[in-house]
Image (tube, rainbow, N blue to C red; front, side, top):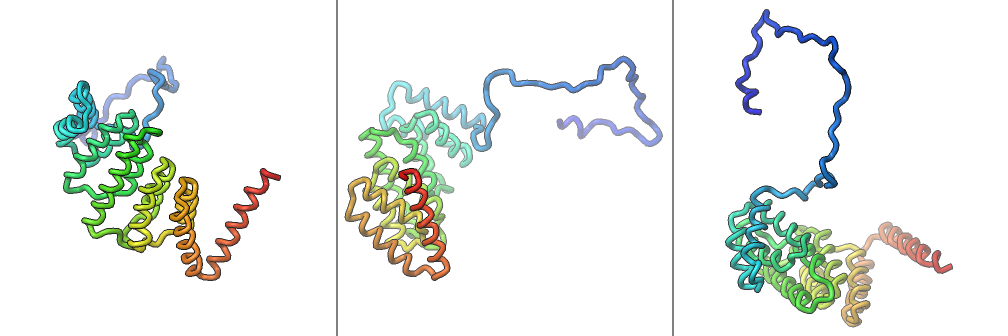
Length: 257
């Protein structure tokens, strides 16, 4: 559309000749989709650079997908991507089921100056990890250790500076994947030692998750933390919480009756 900047403008007193309209068909022209692809969704479109980098990474690791080979290939294929493209490439690799390659891309991201240990990013890796896979479970535990080490090097968890919603996503993902010990390490570092002010939902997720995964001692500790938190809630807010709890109990009893 740059040619529009250089198109001559009509001078005063001159008008373009009117085109004849007789005999022209007036109607609405519509154009349907050419195939069965759905509409593009926000956040799912990849740049050309990201697409080419993903294809290059797949080619480089077609014969050997060992961690060392994947790490070297990712550094070669993804090392020059901008932040948005690298993050999009990680998400696309997870979506396609190439979880080990996405981990290699995360290793590349860790070396970038813009990188920060984001709980939401790690939550996506936990959620997309292969289920019922011992190797993937061990890799998730290693991810959590790396995340906690990065947070410790950056000053740890600081109340008021952490996104509780992102932290909740990580805890929920770990509990859902059955990584109770890893979830407990995050909870202990962020809430019990870091002093992050979380809400009742986080305590409930952890208490039920620890109990379901057989970590009864940890579940009891979370229950005690919840009781201590409830004691600090102001009376009006406590009344609201009691009303919400009673409503939840009535909903659970209704189907049984």
